[in-house]
Amino acid sequence: MAEYPSIAVNMIATPALAVCVREVVDRMDGRPVIFVHGNVSSSPFFFPVMSHLPAHVRPIAVDLRGFGGTDSLPVDASRGLKDFADDVWATIDALGLVEVDLVGWSMGGGVVMQMLLDAPARVTSMTLINPVSPFGFGGTTGLGGTLVSPDGAGSGGGSANAEFVKALDEGDEGDGPASPRTILRTFYVAPGWDRENEGLYLRSMLATSVGVDNYPGDSVPSDNWPGVAPGRRGVLNTMSPTFLDLSGIVDVEPKPPILWIRGEVDQIVSDTSMFDLAQLGALGVVPGYPGPDVLPPQPMVGQTRLVLDRYVDAGGKYTEIVVPGVGHSPHIEDRDTVVAALQELLDL
View (cartoon, rainbow, N blue to C red):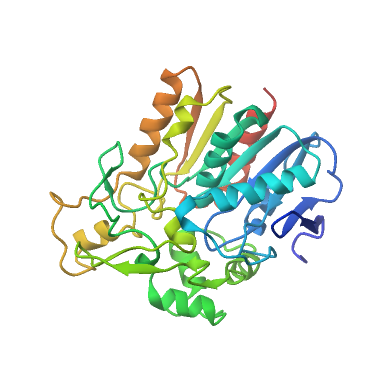
């Protein structure tokens, strides 16, 4: 990548697929920190932070299946985020690493929570950056993540904006209302972002495999509002509450320290998410909304805090950092704050 010549790109063979891994060229030793990106993105979103971590840290960014440079295998959404978690653990094994620090952004936050569930003894610390709720994305109510409809209506592959999916599939680099560039500028970041490396991030988004087996996934009709429920294939269905429940991190042993970093004005993962169909229904954007008594917007931040508070009650610890004036991507909007927070965690 021309913008970051110090980043090396390697393909790592695992039993299931070839995984694209990106590392800082002069940091092949040191404390391994695994970075896991979010939906419709890939590891270049972490380059600013990776390049500014201290010398004793070995930053390793992994592209998930169907994103960036990694092979595009089908995603079995009925396993929740386990396909992704298995791939990252297989990559870590192929690199000969035993214990690692995990950093996950957005959907990647859910992936690293699943990784903690799968192998807690191998996780030295876990950092969540604007993570998906432990109870998934859409279709739940209350802090405990209660399903609104048994079929998870309002979540999954059918909740994607069809025009955005089309633009992504066509490699649209323009600035139309549903283009990846516009979504990046409008929702990935808060107003005032300096657009540094915008081309790098746009290319990262456009390297997303589009289709029913990847992004966004399939869907099925539903008798419940908004008339669509999650299917069993593809990315968005992995985060449907019918398949995803990560609240079991409360019970893992040992319990590594958790750092929770979130942007103050995040529009994607929030208690009033502009990607939650219930919130859009309440705003009149999606017709037929049954009202907040039936389907209130999902309290995503509140659900995460509930689970992390229970983690503390069970003997763990976490630190929450709210970055003011920042949206869904603190690591590119306020690199220095994220670097400082990670450095303090890793210096423990």
